[in-house]
Amino acid sequence: MTANALFKLLLRLNRVFIEQRQIEVKEQLIESEDALKDFRERNRSIMESPQLQLEMERLMRKVEIKTQVYITLQQQYELASIEEVKETPSALVLDEGTPAMGKDQPKRKRIVFLAMFLGGFLAGTISLVRQTLKGETAS
Image (tube, rainbow, N blue to C red):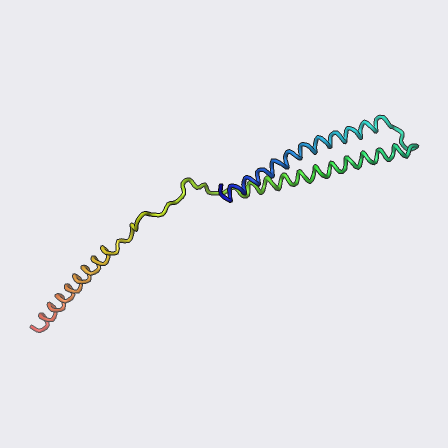
């Protein structure tokens, strides 16, 4: 497994963990909110009882903590999703490249031979043209 594939797997596992934890905390938050609601319905007048006031504050604090944890997990989930998408490659490699078995281009022997032949041909042609021009000017 390549390092990139391992990194993507870790990102996906992180996102899945956060998603599962978010579901758990949401259920706990709903339970805490229901407990607070039930307490308020059972105890309409809590001003005379310090113990009931403490109990209500404890339940409210529990709801607040669960709400904050849920919000934090929601933010972490969004960041993990963005990070997972960001690490997805924009180009897909279909086949891995393989080195060539031998040199294909340029064929140096052919190039050198052609250069020598053309150079000789050009030199001969220029020499003939000069001699022809010298012969005509001499006459």
